[in-house]
Structure formats: structure tokens, C-alpha cells
Image (tube, rainbow, N blue to C red; front, top):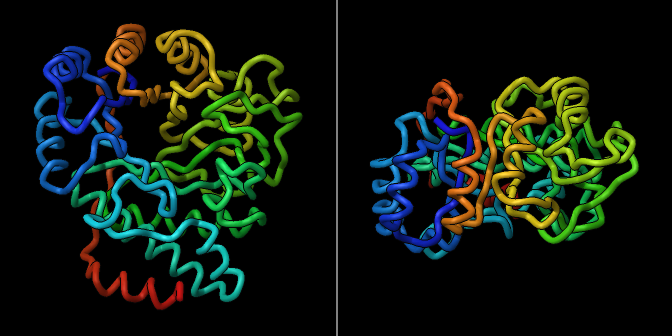
Length: 318
């Protein structure tokens, strides 16, 4: 199995994509809005992916709620952004924490029903100095972020999907969009680390494409051995599966394969490449090494009355 999760181009798996996935056996595939039209189409795509992926492979989706959602109305339920849940928590801690768990459970239930096993949420970034994070962050208070992030993650796991906490060691203070350029910060603030350290026992975390010059003058966290070993594995204490943010983002340089190789050499477990451009995907999968199949974390779903949970969440968010 290859330690990479990759994108595909459109709503139908092409013959070339299917052959490449079967040949390389990646750890998974990530789907985006370009891949998702409606439930019947998504079911066909999921079946096509499962026919060529290794049995242990994950199928991943970004489904935070708010503006970061790939499953959207009219076919799927909308969910509030993290900042709206943080506002409820500021008024009533109990209601806010329950709304966060319910949101995680509802997102998890819809993703699990569609066939996803891995959801890129919750966001544990503190604040949101740039709009790329903005209302995706629960609050500017690290303790609030820690509590609400935990609640969302527990809701996701209760629904039977695995959460990915992001973006370690903290993207909230960055004033640039790493999709477009490399953000640079002088240092990692202790407050940035609080939500991640409080949630260090979660199964997955995602790195940030940010250069923190006090820790590493040259490389962003995703490709920084000092930051991964001393901060993410050390100060935060995370020992689970560490996945990169999208390696196709413009914060990074080099070919797709070079970007993936540097991230894995720095200590990431999984290289994530999302563009769906076949040549770039092939470059990543040709470069990353074969590894023995690993037992990825899995969650056992709890029985859920989705309609009742949605009605309760709506009351708390009103």
C-alpha cells in the first residue's frame, strides 16, 4: 500500500484512474465537489472506487460545516460553521458543547451513509486572522476551541467515521492563504498548541503549510522534521496518523512527487494530494514508497435518530 491519499478528476472514475489506483494501491482517495452530484451518482462512484482500492483504504471528504462542505443541499443537510457553534457556547457552555457534538454526529452520519470513512474536521485553529480560516475556527479562546473540537470529533466517531483534527501546530494566526502562498510566522504560540494538546489522543491530525521561523527557518511544518518531531509529536504529544494538508497548494514548491517525499521524510504518515490531475497523482504514487498495509483507526457507529438529532441541534442554534 502507498502512504498517500489522492484526488480524482470528476464524478466518474475514468479507466486510467481506475488502473492507476489498482496498480499503486494508495491508502485512500479524497472526494471534492467536482466529484459529487447527487446520492445515486455518489453511490456509483463509491462502488467503482471500492472495486479498485485496497480493502483497508479510506475514502475521505472535507465536511466541516459552513462554507467547507462537499455534501450540500438540496441532496444533503447543511451544517453551521464552527464560529456559530462557538457563539452558542459563549452564551451557554452546555448548549454549545451539545450543539458541537450534534453537528459532528450529523455530519458523520451523512458521510458514513454515503460511504466515507474519514472526515477532515474539526478545525482546531485558534482565531482566524485570515479569511481562509475565519469562521471555520470556533473562537479566539484556545480552551473553547479545545472543548468544541473534542465534541465535534466525538460526534463524528459516534457516527462511525474518523475525524482529522487540523491544522497542526496552528493556522489561526497566519495572515496569508496557504492555498495561494506560504504563510510565515515568527514562532509557534503556546495558545496555538492548547487545542491540539488537549485532543492529542484523537486518531488523525493534519499538518499546516506554514513556516514558523523560530522552529525551522527553511521548511513549512508539513515538511519540517524539527516541527513534526519536537512540536507535533513532542509538545502536542500526538502519536496517531499524521496526514499532510493538500500538497497541491501553492504554499509548497517542487514537483508533486518531491513535495510528497519531503513530507514523508519529515515524519508525516500520509501524503495528501488533492488536485485530481492524473499526471500529478501518478508522480506522487510513483515516488512514495510501498509500505506494509497498516491497521487504520476505525469507529463503530452508535444507533442514531438523525431527524431527532437535527431538530435538537436546530433548537440549540436558534
